[in-house]
Image (cartoon, rainbow, N blue to C red; front, side, top):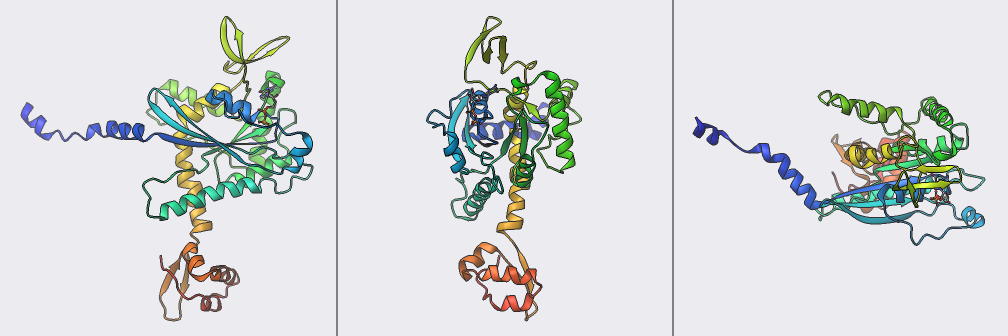
Amino acid sequence: MCFVQEKDYVGFATLPNQVHRKSVKKGFDFTLMVAGESGLGKSTLVNSLFLTDLHKDRKLLNAEERISQTVGITKHTVDIEEKGVKLKLTIVDTPGFGDAVNNTDCWRPITDYIEQQFEQYFRDESGLNRKNIQDNRVHCCLYFIPPFGHGLRPVDVEFMKALQDKVNVVPLISKADCLTPNEIRRLKDRVREEIDKFGIKVYQFPDCDSDEDEEAKQKDRELKESTPFAVIGSNMVVEARGQKVRGRFYPWGIVEVENQAHCDFVKLRTMLIRSHMHDLKDITSDCHYENYRGVNTFVCVCIRMYQGCVCVFGQESLEKSEGGDFKHLQTGLKHNQFESSFKHVSIGLIC
Ligand code: GDP
């Protein structure tokens, strides 16, 4: 009997271990973008999240410089290692956003940046060295909402709407220590209502698996109810209740960044690192990147040719071989001039 069992044992039950070992060896990468007005605590929060000073060399701009500099996107990469697991973390900072009086289209450089990363990935994917692709696609964008208003400002609505189909947007209420618990609750309700009202698509936490235990389900419910997370950041270590903690020291007391009674920092960190990093990456790849491929880069056009066969063209190949004829083709297609547009294209490459 024992012999039969041994013979029948194929061993694929070890597959998860193999995947685990391979993934750990390869390491992980994650790209996080922070956006919002300068001065809302973006850099401080990122430093607090990853316990590393990512902005050592940062030059603080004065008001005039901030207004003249529309959006300067900076990228910081750090390699973090924890218990032998390596994480290459890239933070994309978008300082200066929303500072000017006229904020029309101020999100354009940010959306362009995200699309450039998709484009680069698409090129790499279609290239010869597909094995070692560096994934710089933005997996999550933390959008900072100021604590001072009565909800979302028009610029917040427009910004999030401009980004919603390109990246997972996670709205945050910044500097939550400026508000009382009641004010936080009211502001959260208001922001949630406005997100619904304006049809903003923010990152949706996936539903818990039905076979998860009750504790996990409860945590999942709490996580969803806490959105938008109200966060506090600090670069300082202070002493509270006999322990050294990250916090902000005030004449009336200490605000602790990691105290769940003070803010949702721990929930945000758990979500980003422990529970939802993979989902954020999957959605980036399966939804946002696929959207990009479908709509922008791989605009596939089916044209009925005179000869009666149907061809499918990729934008890239046509642009390369026809030097702009594809643009003409696209315009023609929009105006329903299939046949006349097609005459301008001598077929370069059929995908
Ligand atoms: P950024 O321009 O959005 O990156 O903002 P910074 O991280 O440079 O922070 C701007 C100022 O706000 C600094 O003086 C920080 O010490 C302060 N700050 C950052 N986070 C918080 C917070 O959670 N609460 C309060 N009250 N101040 C904060």
